[in-house]
Amino acid sequence: MPATPPPFSAISPAGGYVRQQNAFTGRITRDGSSGYPAEPGRYRLYASLACPWSQRALIVRRLLGLEQVIGLSLVDPIRDERGWRFPASQGGRDSTGARFLSELYQATDPLYTGWCTVPCVWDARTQRIVSNDIPQITVTLETEFSDFHRPGAPRLYPPGQRREIDAVSTLIFHAVNNGVYKAGMAMTQAAYEEAFDVLFATLESLEERLARRRFLLGSQVCEADVRLYPTLARFDAVYYVHFKCNLRRLVDYPHLWGYARDLFQRPGFGDTTDFGQIKRHYYQSQDWINPSRIVPKGPFVSWLEPHGRERLSG
Image 1: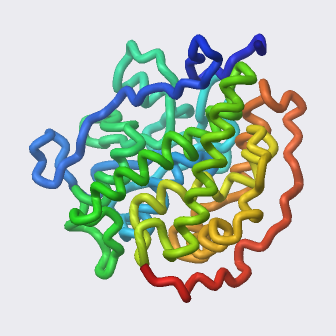
Image 2 (image 1 turned 60 degrees about the vertical axis):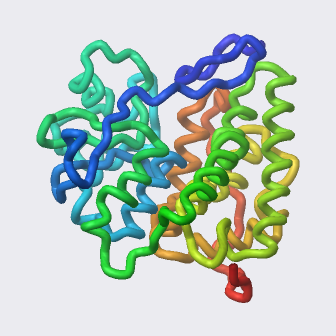
C-alpha cells in the first residue's frame, strides 16, 4: 500500500477512496423560509475552472443567465497544502480580502478542520458560507433562482422529469464522476479494479443510451447532462493516464465523443472548459501521483469538429 494517501479523502479498510462529506448544507430558498432568500447580488460562487464539480455550477450559472445575479470568484488551479488560493493576477486576494479559500471556511466555522472545497456559495450579508453541498448548488440555481433566469433559459430540472434526472445523476456520480477518483485514488489493486470495471461498464451503457437520443433524457439538455460533461471533458487529458482509467479513451466511444462535442460547442460548456488549467491542476497539484509535476502536452483532438447529432431527436 502506498505510504502517502490522498490528503483530502478517507481510505476504506479495503483500500478504497471515500470522498469527504459536504459540511455546509444551508439552503437558499425562493421564499426566504430558510433564512437565506434568493436575492440578486447577495451571494457569490467560489469555483475553479480546473475542478469538475465547480464546472457544473459554472455551466448552470451561464446557461440560466445568472451572471449578474450570482457573483463569481475563481481560485488558482494550483492547490498546495494550504488549499485553494486566489490568483496572483487578481492581486492574490479575493473581494473579501482573503488570500486562501480556507479563510472563508474558518470565518464560517472557526473549528472546521475538513478540506476546504469548491464549489461553495458565500453570503455577503452574513459573511459566511451557505453551502458547499455540490449536488444542491446547481439545483438551487435551477429552482430557487427561477425568478432571475434569463428569458428563454433552458429548463434543466423540470418537475415532471426530476425522478428520472435524479436516478441517472446518481448513477453518473457513483460510477463516473466519483468513479474516476475511486480508480485514481485507490490504495489497493482490488479497490482500483472494482472502480475501473464499474466505470467502463457504465460508460458502455451510456454509449448505448446516447446512440438513440441526443442527450441523456431526450432532445433537451438537462441537469444530468451538466453532471456528466465535466468528467468527459477531463477524461482523455487527465483520467485516462493520471488516474489509470485506460481501457478506452473518450474518443473511442463514437456516441459519447459526439455527445461531448455537441455540449462543448454550446455556450456554457466550452467557454467554461479550460484544458490548460485542468491539466495544470491535476498534474501539478497531485504530486503523490505525479512527483515530477510534468504536464503532458497532449492529447491533440478537435472539440470543434462537427458532431452530427442533430439527426437524433428524443
